Image 1: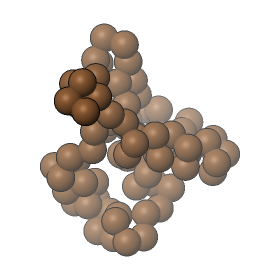
Image 2: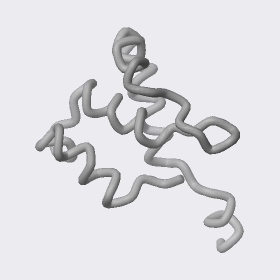
Image 3: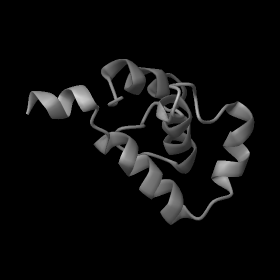
Image 4: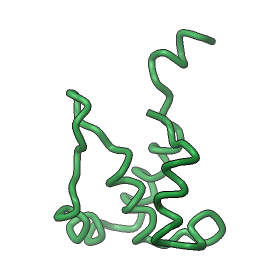
Length: 79
């Protein structure tokens, strides 16, 4: 689903300046929270964080951006 205020608050508890100065760690944290597999289960867990941080910056930024751009089927149907 889309990023909610609760999701942002959750990341900001760990990374205070998340919205104004996102770091690779905070971006990966949001990816861990929001990315789900086809059955709705988390696609990644905490053990995946180090692997994700090892990816090129462009990959992290692209996935992070797609998390914020995600639109659910229900939202599309409303439009």
